[in-house]
Length: 340
Ligand code: ATP
Ligand code: MG
Image (tube, rainbow, N blue to C red; front, side, top):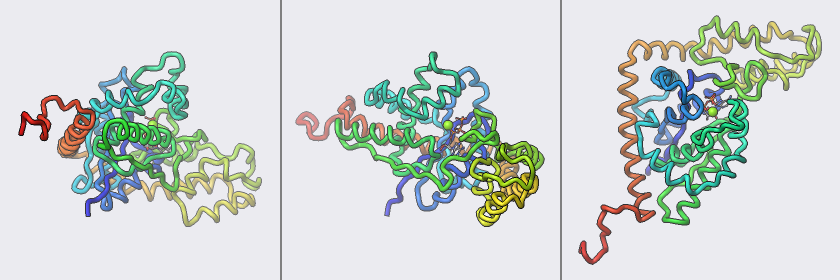
């Protein structure tokens, strides 16, 4: 039986953090046997907010590749590739751009939140506004069925589905309509209590942080502001540290919740326990990352091979798309009398 495909990935705007892990990376590593998995390093999408810093892309592409490999993405089973090395994604983006209205993009809630974050309100780059269209091309170029993502991406997957339906109905059914897969932690909060841990917000624990950095960050993390003394009754639902217990300490979380609410565990021991748990979880990832870090050439080879495979898939999809739109000018129609 032919395996279904996954497309998922990250923007190379810095190393990956715990939010990426629980939102998407854990699922992609888990599902790579069951699905033919493509992991994109979306460098063109990184430029939609970091267009003035292209010189950082090389390092950030490598960094995101290292994080994926460290988390168990196996290049023998999954295809890890760089977006701009697959020009068909750009070609598809141009064609899909006609199937979406500017208003749909302006009303996309994730675009709204991120535009405010980047101060784009009255000077929004065309590339930024259109990145969900390019994301539709990222997903469909390899005819992916499933997209493991964090909750913030759901409006984009919905837009991809709309584009696919419109394309297939208007031209011919050449594209696969994907479905999103959110994890049990669809959105991990930031250390500052912001609703999303994010590279851009500087409120993240990175997968490559040292044990000391983790200790430092958790020690300073925002907890229940109403709690002054360790014996005060706490409100775990507003505490970032509790959210991390929920995500990384499944066996201990209900006990922590009870004790926090009863005022029988203070924030200091609660944080100490979390620091231990996170460092225990991160240690093998750090180890694996540092092994790969010693051989960057091998990582670039993995990306080159992955990009070549992805590009072949892109070419296959583009041929089907051109045929569906009847713009395959130089391919003789098989049934035309001249060619018979
Ligand atoms: P940036 O700050 O560059 O926008 P980002 O943290 O949003 O970075 P992306 O590369 O855009 O990272 O996201 C990669 C994947 O990780 C997406 O599927 C996204 O939904 C998921 N993700 C990112 N942050 C979180 C989070 N805090 N909780 C759950 N999933 C997340
Ligand atoms: Mg993002």
